[in-house]
Every structure is written in structure tokens, then in C-alpha cells.
Length: 303
Image 1 (cartoon, rainbow, N blue to C red):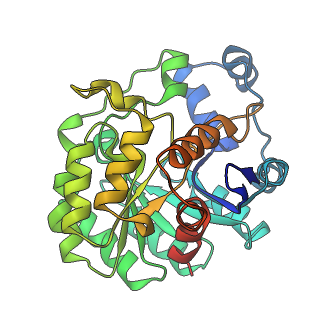
Image 2 (cartoon, rainbow, N blue to C red):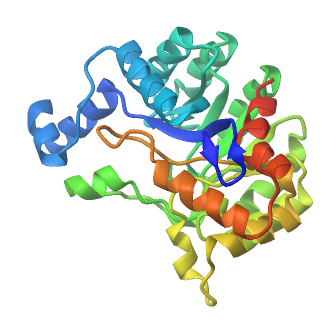
């Protein structure tokens, strides 16, 4: 892909895999048909074939020159859709499985998925599912992560807003008591062999996310989304300041570029890459560090 530094390989650490099952659950909650859901959203809903959706994403990645991407199963229990995508394109896609530790089936499903070789990380959304990351049921799942390479866990912290639910007028009964990255501190120390990814720079808990990174060398930040959380800061932050501070504390080897892309027909959100690469270039980041953030760090995480 052409960038301010010239041609640069890109790997996206954060794409949501909105599968047929994902849309079916939304339609059921809204009590409408899939056809009505598609009309209401104004999006192109995918068919029943996860491999076809994977192919659509590969076309998008090819069009934009993106070499690798992490695909997130966006509801618990939808890991098989992402696994099918990874099986179809193992050299291009990494699989992330959303888990709810409160589910009685979570551990068995995680064990099966991670041991298959087609799932690479577990995703925890404590505020969404109303639990503490320090819960013993989380420890059970992290024990499984620790026993299965590549030993990666994704933990969403900070503000959590699911755009498609808001668009449909569906309630989001989340609990932000469980959103602070500081809660992850003792957990990350207990599992030094696991690499923990905190998306969106902590999504409003930037200071706390930096503290966590400073104390725990196994914590990474992903840069995904528009990072609109910056408007909550007393002194409004821009992306240049965010990147400068993150590089100062976490260093260039623990930042993972991501877009938070999700639906069609928009596909891969190139505007996120353009804004972030521009900010990095403007603070004087050279090609070598840009390549680490935009590609190499994610690939090395799963090597």
C-alpha cells in the first residue's frame, strides 16, 4: 500500500466478522426478518456461507493492499464462522473468538477452537457481559489460552458502544464498572506468557492503559477505530499526541494498527488508515517504526 513512507505492508489487527449468525441474532432481537434488517440498516447482509464472506473480505484486503487481518467473531458462539474463514485463508487471516466466561459452554468451546489451529486469540468484553476480568471463570479461560500457542488474549476496556445496536434502536445493557484497564494489571502479571491486547488505546482510559503497559511488558495496544474517546479528555487530544505518548510509554513494538472495519458495502475502512498514518508521519515516525506498527508487530504476535 502507498503511504507517506512509500510502499508499506499493512496488517489490520481489528476487523469484525459480521456473519449470517450475527445478523440473525440481531433480527431475532429486533423481531424482524433478515430482509427487513438489511433494509433498515442499509447494509449488504452476507449469506449463510462464512467462506463467501471471507472471500469478500479478502477482495477488500487485496484492493487496499492489506496483507493480513484479524477477524473477530462479534458474538459469543460464532467462532465457527471465523474458523471457517481462517481455514479458507490461513495465510491471510487470524481468528479471534469472543467468549462470555459466564457461559457454561465457554471453556469447552475455547479449548476446541484454540486447539484446532484455526483460532488464534480469545476476546473478552467485561462491560458487555457484566463480569470482572479478575473473575475465576476468566482464569479458567486464560489457563486454556496459556496452554495453546500463540497465547493471545484481547480485552476490551473503556467506552463500549456497538454502532449496529444503536442504529437498530436495541438496548445495550453494558456495565462500565468492568471497563478499567487497571483491572487487567494483576491478571497480566499472573499470566506473563500471554500477550494481552487492549483495543482503541483503552477507549477513554488512555492514562490507565499507558500505566498498564508501563507495568506489564506483555500488554499491547491496538490503535483501531476513530478514537473518538479523545473528546472526553480535559485537554482535547489529537491522534498525534496519542501516538506520541503511546510510543513513549509502550514503545514501537507493542502498538498494533487496526481499523475496526465491520460491514459492507463500506468494507475496509481506509479512512482510519489514512488518518493514523498521517498522524504518525507528522510526529516524525520513520519507515522502520511505521512498518512495525502497521504490519510486523501483528505478524510477530502470531509467529
